[in-house]
Length: 180
Image 1 (cartoon, rainbow, N blue to C red):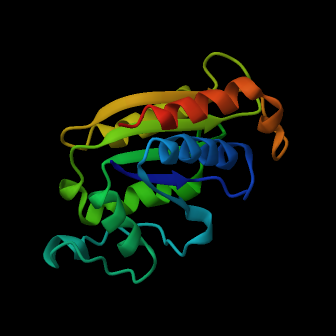
Image 2 (image 1 turned 45 degrees about the vertical axis):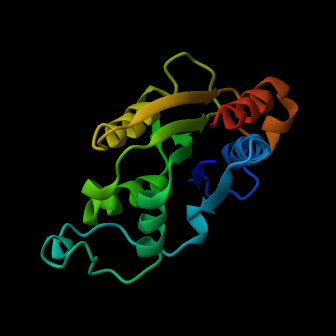
Image 3 (image 1 turned 180 degrees about the vertical axis):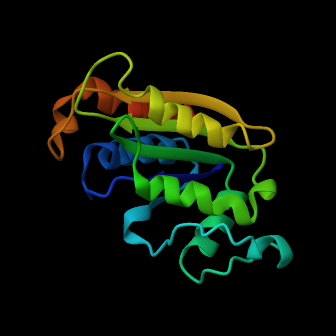
């Protein structure tokens, strides 16, 4: 059994990437894993100020918000799922803020299996390159990371539209089932 943490960056509850996170969770749970999904847009997470208070305080951030608990969960999980809709060919601000705030204890984040879930209205081949590059950039800072899967949810714009794309729903579910 693995401890799975899903960070759903979608600002829309029931949005396309959020729904795919639920499908991933369903598959991972069916395989007997412990799964938690955090909708980061529902948390109080301020942007990193670059003050480096954390450097001199044992990793404690000067900002007192929900990020401390989320960061501990990131450190403790075995599998980390990063999910974001594509905004202007990059990841959404909500997920990027979480990633930036890991700076307080980033060296403690290690040995993670990583999955990426992205959605976009466009369906061009390069639509998600910037978003995936941001996720991969974070991964490169993790000792012992293993990128296990990427879901490219192209061509979905309207909230919930992804439920009409059974192939995307199946991919998310199977990615979750692959967690062992």
